[in-house]
Length: 496
Image (tube, rainbow, N blue to C red):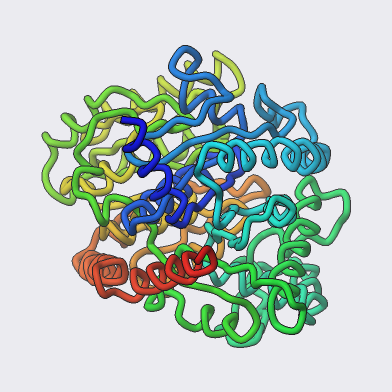
């Protein structure tokens, strides 16, 4: 028995081991878990490392201690502290202070994770990190990790925009943003013309008083990191694993490759490799509690291509007015709908009661509907009854809709969502809805128009074609699969 354990430990030490460090948000944790499974599927070891607050939600107290490493489906999970073990409260906590804390506390506690993994016979070969965590590269280097990589969980078009913004084109972007015209064009090297509204919203920040002003220095630091690694610096390169594929963003990838080591490995979605991912009813260890599976039974009762699925993601906050407009649109559209409305989407119990009333009225006046707190989105988008996805257009949701062949009504709010909406329209798989007022409300009439437009045979055909392209990219022999395998091979040779 002892001999077998020793042989197993020696085998693990010979495998490449990827530690994927994430920010405590569902939009970061979900793709990290998918990437870890891809590494394991390719024969490597993988551990997802999340802040304590996220770890406690994924593995509730009583199931496992925070200091322990756990394993699910061949993937390891570990926790580091970002200094906010009780979680970040957007209503009272300061983003700038948080970023300073996560850098200071995170650096110390992540070093502890690396030591524990090394002492346990599973030393980390490559540290991978998601957005806003460039300090991970320094911690990795100080702890003798031989390679680092950024897992870019936004479209690579957004990365290209950030790169060129910080490399000589800032003034052009700022001037266009200052015009207050969302349709003002910006020309960046190697990219098609983009309007201000198509750029990551953080690039349009023109005041230090903006609540998201703290983000730009973080992205600037990342671009500097990517530029200084490799080449004549004598330091190993920091790779970029981009959650995209060549057919989707070929020109953006081409604009970056002369400057940084970018590898297209997407779409990184487990269900494209394992059909059971869209059938299992076990807990996926999300940061939000799922409703019961009754919504899937409800979808089974609906005709193919008839249901409007509505979800604005894990971090968007929906105003009472916006809820009312969506409810009115669904009542008038006479189409069945499945609507995800989180309980933390409302300010108080009165708001929550009002929302329930609106949704119930929409379901009664229209063709029937259902509201849930959270759901297994890939399973919903894979269901044959779903014919349209009304979304904030986060990158995870955008990729899932493309991979499932579901047309999109995009209602972007901030960050990369406008860029994602631009891609959706460029690919012909959806439309960007027009919003009104300072609050950017999507009105009922406009939503109804957009739903009718995308639930057409022409859009469905284009969506089906892109579904095939996405599947081909990650299939055996596909471009993204080859690129990921080559990346793992390169990292593995550094340990020989």
